[in-house]
Length: 189
Image (cartoon, rainbow, N blue to C red; front, side):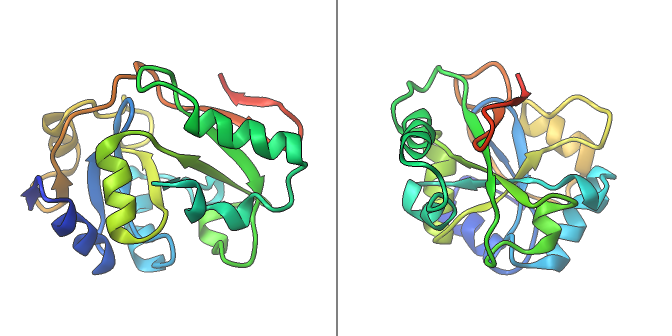
């Protein structure tokens, strides 16, 4: 299925299916992070190991607020500012934060932390808000291949059986940088 309807795409996620969709810089694969079956389908599509963990994408800070409570106030402000004080052309930032009991082990992989990002991409924001929470966001490509940068690229990788939310990529040229909130270490520059 290919749709331009955010409501239809959110329904796909709610039904436990995988969705390909455009993000700030590349196409992503997403699902309900609490649905292990859907998550394992993403790993199968990507030919990716469960040990690596994935990014959770939110449409607003309130959707990940519970993951920010352990942060020192100045770090919490830095994290939130990186999401809310950037332009649409600025590169997105994903933060590694301590996972809580709401985050399933399959999302974290072999880590105690979880990668989270609040997007300012209008379509992704609308999708997370229609889904009523954060979703899995991992690049739409089999392991070792370039991330999809168009619906055509994604459908060449994954075929017509997958569900697609068609729309434009954001204005960033690169996938999000990843920073460990507890140490400041840059994981992906």
